[in-house]
Image (cartoon, helix red, strand yellow):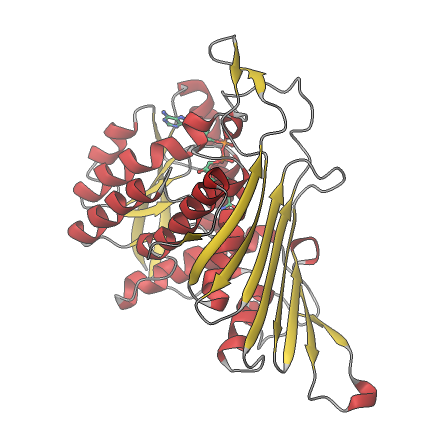
Length: 378
Ligand SMILES: NC(=O)c1ccc[n+]([C@@H]2O[C@H](COP(=O)([O-])OP(=O)(O)OC[C@H]3O[C@@H](n4cnc5c(N)ncnc54)[C@H](O)[C@@H]3O)[C@@H](O)[C@H]2O)c1
């Protein structure tokens, strides 16, 4: 196997998810390339050192520029907050590195476009970690739609609900809470949670034409961890929008961090002429499927346990009936990326694919601000 040396930036939630995927992928998938955990990078030498030791990284860096300058690094993995993605990705592209970047691609569309231009000019393999595409039940949904099982699509319905920011005492900014600071996150639930729903939707149902959105910031001021002062909150705490897809279907999307009782309830439902599909992150190994062409008396929602060897990715894991989880979606994404590198065929979503999601997010935020329908740039 050819070695592919990874330089990871950021050791938080996603730093762990990616490292786990890099470590496991070669055990389960037959690939030409094998990821090598060469270097982990973050600002604190103690913290990144402890992380590197725990996950088996050979070396550590505290300055991402030094990491990018290293000759022994083939791929830069960006797993740090959103405001850093652009600068790192462009520098990495200029240095000729392959790039994996966390979502959302950028703070907004124009930033995203700069990143797309940089990777395309450099000709480096690139991908964005919209990992939900690689949950086997979601990939199966894609296959069913491509086979035409649903027929014409009428409706797409998605939501992503959480409840962790309801307390007004929660500060904004700094470790863990950068998501509440608009200067670092770019937006609130739109770029954080709806971006996932939008990526899946564009993948399953094609491009979006226009959107009409409303957003709300329920807690208007919060103490900022870095300045110590009470500052205006600039993110959207909740967002709901209507959309028209180019295939003529109508859609609703909703996301909030104020839905008491919900931790990460991501669901989508698609209603077609012949069949409907429903998926729920809390039951991620199942796909609910309704087929109208079944014999009338037996018609009903099927709950497909997506664990058989002929289900997407499942032949690589255990035996039929034994399910896998959230972390495996990252393993699948690395496997597809490495396979794409070997075959010279980029795995999706590339930066250019992810830019489409960024444009929808931009249109959603603009529509909410202006109170009218907004066409999605493409
Ligand atoms: N794909 C997904 O499902 C998913 C889930 C969560 C987060 N994300 C995305 O992943 C990214 C990181 O989110 P997270 O939840 O892992 O955040 P986190 O707060 O858990 O970790 C962020 C990491 O970035 C590091 N960092 C910050 N500034 C740095 C600097 N100047 N140099 C080097 N390292 C620096 C921090 O030390 C920390 O290790 C974000 O873009 C987020 O939107 C994606």
